[in-house]
Length: 186
Image (cartoon, rainbow, N blue to C red):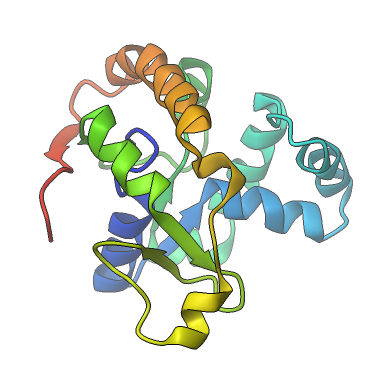
């Protein structure tokens, strides 16, 4: 867990690859469930289409269903982007599949803002780039890059504020979590 721009997705990708675990990104999961057209997916889709937060009850259902799938139960999983608040964290402990390790990525708001406001995505490949520290290799990819609407400075400041308000509660649920300095360069 960590604030937006702390490197959760990047670290989850590295961990899941190294240990051959399933990478479960909550935001990708919600989009995937919404796209599959199930009853739960249709409910989630309404919120995504209107750019609203998906209610905890629906997020919890989607995450619990995903963690119960064979790949997660047989290989293990790296979950990121969830839990986001105290209620979700407490509910996670009620799931059949609970985390055996929890990491908090610690980083300042300034670093998060630099990372996110300079972040761009290639909408063809889904690959993320940073305009300063990790630019694309080709002009073709450069032309395709787009900034996500929620990566703007004002939106990010609000997201960081919400995370900071929730983080103490999250840490109280996971007192044995590992705290990692996420400002370090890899």
